[in-house]
Every structure is written in structure tokens, then in C-alpha cells.
Image 1 (spheres, rainbow, N blue to C red):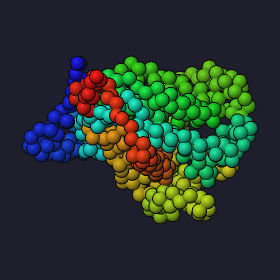
Image 2: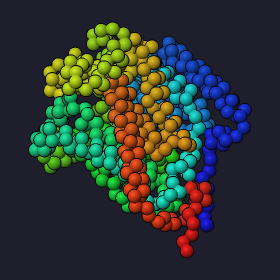
Image 3: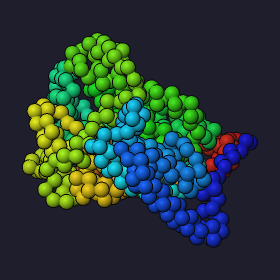
Image 4: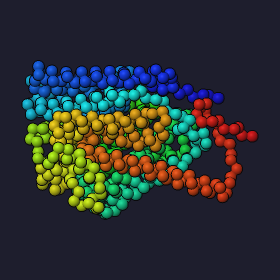
Length: 516
């Protein structure tokens, strides 16, 4: 019988090895964190010498590369490693557009008002680099005996049915939201009206997060079986395909994010599980996402006018794009940061107000109609009141939110906390040896929103975290209920157990008895 050799990483060997190796690990992280602190001094020195934002820009690039170089498992730049992925997503929110602008300028310089914004972005990079470096840990090989049960490994188990049930519940919530609008009106609304219809109905629209967890869990279930050399149940692959197709409805709504975050969640979960994804395919995916985003942005102009009009508008928008590297959304995020830093809009009444309101906003609007407004809503009302009344909004950005609360220190703290609590720790949990498939799915879903929340604010991130936690809890409770019901039925009608198929992997589960 062929045995499945699951190689163990240095982190797993160290965990199973002698005690002194474990005691030395924190010292390595301390030295690496001090290295980041030393690199953080380069930016101000370079800016004092070069000026015009050049020093902040070079320092920001060095800082965001440091976590990959000081990685616990050894230096490596891999787009799905936490030490590379999280700094890269932060870079998109604050550094991508100004660097393009810097490279395209004749003087290789930024205007003074943009240089001030880059200083704020640099403060956030310090927090991001320190958090990612201090928390870096080697990835461990998954515990195959736990993830591939010895009892009927090819059959669908209670948690599989529970996850599918929670995914169907999520779709039901979305359908209920569409029903409150009306199917006919839903497909004839423009993009801004669609956003307005979400106001006060976050409980219904959060159904998409339940669907997202179901997709990632089912994909991981298939991956664990394939890695063990076993065939996957048709019900799991069919359910995963159906849930994934439902996500495409967001494209009709003019939303680019949900499909991108779903694909990214799957990629992060597979990478944490030890499934190798070729960099070529990742490159193809990035290019595809880039043009997908451009096409959806063009289709928004004719949203509600019929599919043919939207497709024509998307094609025309693609034809008009002169430089696909200039991403309009990233330019707007950076432009908002520039405005916040230079004009300091009076939308915060006391230091830390938006952080306090982020927790108060979790109260459903039907229960508290006068709950505080989010920072992005306040900013939209200040910058463009008419645009805000018609459903328009501006991406506030975590760097801008931190700055509005307590200045440069606020930006460093907010980005550091975001990087540690919401993204680095979930990715470490997803790569832990003892993590269940459900924990891996929930953690990957949360971490996939890294870029989305670096361009957003704390309130939105807390809502996403709460939705994912409720989804994972619902799967756990439903699994227990199904086990209880099945146990009761088997107790009333005991069935003769049949010997299951022998597993290919000697180290996975326990081999079943041969048939006679």
C-alpha cells in the first residue's frame, strides 16, 4: 500500500523537538522586531536629505519588505505568505498611486501636500512592519488524522451538511433582502441606489459572509481528500460550485469585491494548508482581476439599463483605458488621504471618537435609529453632501482614520492593530497544525479582507468579523444538532456497520478492516 509522505516544516519539527529550540524562538523575534525599528529610522533620514516625499517613499518600500526578509521561516517573498501579503495590501492602500505619480513626474518628486500624506502612510507602514515581524511564525503541516476522519473519509459528515446549511441560510438572507426591494426593481436600479437599499439592512446582506465561509470550507474539504489520495463526495463539489456561482450575482450589482475576496480567501486557505499554487497562475489571476475590476467599473455606468447596455459600457471603458496600471479606486483612496491630512476635516469631536463609534455602530439600526454615523459617512457628508444623499461614498482608509483620531501615532497604532489582530493572527491560525477546516475557512475569509479594510475603517471591519464569527458558530451548533439527531436515530434503529475502504495514506486515520 502506498504511503502518503507529509513532510513537516521546520516549525512543526521545532514544536515536536527539544525544549531549548522553543525557548530560543522568542529571542529571534525580538531581534527581528528591533531590526524593523532600526529600519524605521531610515525614512526620516532620507526625507531630510532628499525631500519632496522621496525619502518617505523609499523608506516605506524598505519597511514593507522587511517582514519578508525577517520572516521566522527564513527570508522569502511569496504573495500568500502573511509577511508578504499583509504589507503588500497596505501598500496598495497608501503607496501604489503616489509611487506611480513619483515615477511619472519629471522632477521625480511629489508636491508638498502629497509629501505630507506620504509621511502619514509611512507611520502606518511602521505599525504594519512591526506587527507582521513580531508575530511571524513558521507554517506547520496540517494534522491529517484530524482533518481526514478515519470513519468513512469519502462520505459527507455532519459538519459538511451543517456548512452547506449555513451557506443556504446566507443565500436565504440575501434573497430576503432582494425581496424587500422587489426583483424587478433590483435589476433596474443604478449602482448608487443599490447601495442605498443596504442602509439599515446589514443583517440581510451579511448573508454573503455565510456563503463565503461555506465556499472556503468546502474547497478545503476537497483539498484535504485529494491530498490524502481519496475521491471527493459529489455533494461537496456540487455545493461548492453552486455557492460560487451565487457570488457572481455581486457582479450584476456592480460589486467587484465579493468575487475577488472569495478567490483570495480560497487561495490563502489552500496556501496555509500546504497546497502549492504556482506563481504563474497567481500572476494570471492578478492580471485577470485587474481587467475584471476595470470592466465592472465601466458596467456601473449603465447599471439598471439591461445586460447588453452594461456589457457595451464595460467594453467601451476597457477601450478607453490608456494605462491599466493606473487604478482609479486606488487613486481616490490616496486622494482622500491627501485631503484629510492637509485640510483636517472637522468630523471628529474628540480623540478616538470613531474607534468608540465603531463598537456602537454594531447595534442594529432597527434597534437604534439614531446610532452614530461611520467616519466614511461623515466624510462624504463633509466633502460632497449632495453626492452622499444620493448614496455616494468615499473610502476613508484606516491610515486616514488613525490620523484624524490622534495624528501620526494614531495611524501607526491603528495599522499595527489591524495587521496583528485581524490579519496576522487569523493567518497564523489558518496555518496551525491543529486548526480544523472550519477555523481555517473563517480565518482565511477574515484575512482576505486585508486590503478592503486598509482602505476602510474600524467600524466596517468589526461588522465583518462579527458576521464571520456568527457564521462559524452557526456551523458548530448545527453540526452538534445533526450529530444529536443522527445519534438518536441510530439508537432507535441500530444498523450493522460495514467495513469502509482502506485509506491510501498510512498516516491518515486508521485503516479499515478488509472485506470478507
